[in-house]
Length: 339
Image 1 (cartoon, one colour):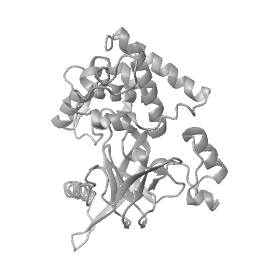
Image 2 (cartoon, rainbow, N blue to C red):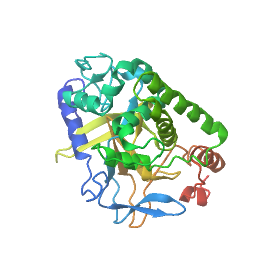
Image 3 (cartoon, one colour):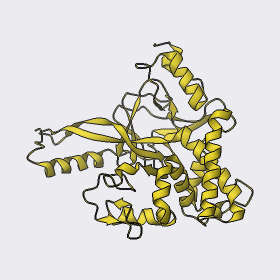
Image 4 (cartoon, rainbow, N blue to C red):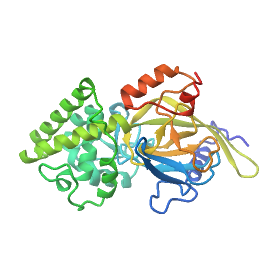
């Protein structure tokens, strides 16, 4: 029966939690727990790495599920959502005792945030928060403990002292399209990387000998965020109903504005198509990629980056993707000239 929001909010919240609990990968890949066992990562010279179905997939299956390596929340939302997992706050009772400017939904999120990045950014958070993707790039650097990972002059991971270095290697390997960038597109991020590295030195967060390598790494991450950053959306579960069989049915609505920006390791391997075979769903900043159509063995798993054949003519889609993502789309919608 349909749940009555106005009279039984607690019961509906319990149903919503069940929905999130049920939205999980059935069988996980043995080597990469974020992926379904029905997928594998392939590679070819033209596409680079891409994700393919190694079994038949039914609509509704969860294909991928992960939290971001690092994320940035919009400053206007710091008292609305947990600043670490991005779930909606019930109260603002848990916060950093030093800066009193960052709020959490639980002690777990507080401790993880502090250990991974906040203890480094804490004294300067009011400044860093205004940098948007610049703060996201800094959080990647802080979490990876960058000075222990690189030599003074080489952008090559040398040490594995951090427990997060495995995930950081995946981030570091994401495409940045440095060589394809036009001077105009590159200039802003070059200046941004220079500014950020000099700012870190001014704040005594790095020493003189680290300025160059940290600047290079920050430039790489800024470019990677351009290519791979995911807008973390606020989604609302509506029309929740529980059938007599116990099955829960519902509708998910995405609100227009995002909560912030995240850098994820696995969704970044999924290529674009101008039509939807998957849909991204968010529980806080945890991203789930769900099949919305049946897929056959050998089909490529794709994800729409924004340009969609229903809303944008082919010529405009191709121009946008070439200018911002540096590739010519050859999805079915483009090859068959759907629009």
